[in-house]
Each structure stands twice: as structure tokens, then as C-alpha cells.
Picture (cartoon, rainbow, N blue to C red):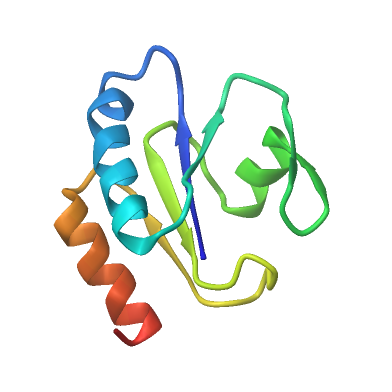
Length: 101
């Protein structure tokens, strides 16, 4: 499982959303990933990916978006795109619905 929050240093919504993502990740027992949409970092997910690759792969057009991957090793596996910030309880409810808990 993997939670990836696409954020920006100047995004106020992201600053509110990040603690909720951290809380949900802690409950799931996973480490969240935070991707700065303004940086050109490289990530090991399915292959060497730049931030631009990730944004294109998930069709992310702005900061403040969250992706949950049920199987981080399978790029075609079950996933959820959260388009707007949510409370950790609501994130967990959606995630648990996807993974059958």
C-alpha cells in the first residue's frame, strides 16, 4: 500500500491536508510519500519516475491531490484518487472499502 500526496510549498490546502494524510498512513501502518509538484525529483515506484512522470501518469494538474495505491508494485492495481482534502477518518473509510476491511 502507498499514499502519495502531491503538494506544493505554497499550497495552503496542502498544509491542512498533510496532517490528515499522516494520521491515515499511521493507522494503516505505512509511510506516506510527499511529492512536491514544483521539484523534478526521481522516485522508485514502478520504474525511475520523475515528478513530471507521476503527474502525467495520474493526470494531476494541481497540488493537494492524494493517490492511494492498494498494491504499489502493480501500476494497474486498485487505486483511489482523492481530488480534495478530507479528514483522516474519511480517507480510511474509502481506503478500507477498496481493500475490503
